[in-house]
Image (cartoon, rainbow, N blue to C red):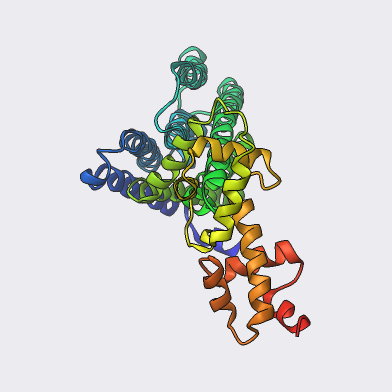
Length: 368
């Protein structure tokens, strides 16, 4: 609480203004040659820039006109008029990246309709109420409660679609790579979840003053800043290409092919070749090594006990690791991990313990 008491409302507003303005500029000045060929990112960054820009304008108005010092009702009016469309744009920017720009007109219409109804309720009450904006108004306070519920409804609607899109990404990436690759797009999950959680506090927190408002504001700043910087970093990185590669493979498997029993022999030959010990395998690489279509291989995996490429590869690698640990007790854990195809020691420990119930070091000791 001491930290909250040290921060004045004016300092918070200036900090918020500068932070949001800098984030908007960062997105607008994004390196062109790294964004133009990715249509979804090119559009998403402008939506996110518009969202952070609206928040910056809100802080500017709050600071210049002193709405928060004037009264809670006046400050909340400005908060909702700007935060609602800003949150919509930021949320849609993330959804754009998840779906590679595929957001339907219906989803846009519903989102903006909820946002528009909220604004109409607020502005209609201000115009019909007849009480000057600088004075407290009970009708306006009631309208703000209703508008904050519409804000929560809008965020819930966007979160539902974000969650569905995120689960589709998880499935596509999990089935394509030889290990969990949530590091490629994990920021999306954290961003959408924190924004959804914060939305549930809006109907209550924005009507408060003091420490609760400071804590909420800091959390909101962090969430928007994290989402903006993560979207920027993701959009100019090669992670986009890696995720899209997995998604394209998934889209080709919407109509599964019948399982080919003869593929079992092909898989066994591939296992005997030891190719599973290569690093950074993908479904495409393995399919080429086996000389079979990716679609056929993935359908075979889905119907097998392994379910996905990572299941098959990890099973084989851990079996190989157990053999090496028994036959070469002098090998270091890093050497065993590298020999078996694992990228790093930490991940090797995690998978080894998951499959065997013990660590490589303990296994080595117990088998001697």
